Length: 139
Image (cartoon, rainbow, N blue to C red; front, side, top):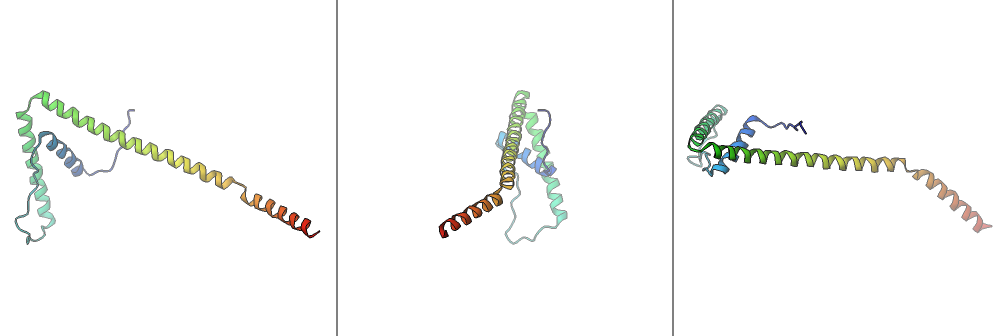
């Protein structure tokens, strides 16, 4: 199947996911920054952007270092492993969508059958039969 399902993920989230996969492969330490003290003030949005930029720079430096220290074979193995995990995740998403669609079709069919069921006609027939039984008893 040539088409892919696209999901609205932010670029930063995708980068973060890929970074985590690379860290798992290379067994690197987490590069998160620990707060200096518990009483620090909340950082303004500009500082957060600067921290994210610094984190991206650190990531780029780590990536360059890992690319230079590992062989092409190891890099291809890591790339193939990441692609396999991505493909497995995409297949899982597609299967979930197909299963949910199948369930939706079943529910729609059941609801359609319930709407077509002549319950009112059956109730009227039952009422007429009950009236006849009542008349027979009174006679």
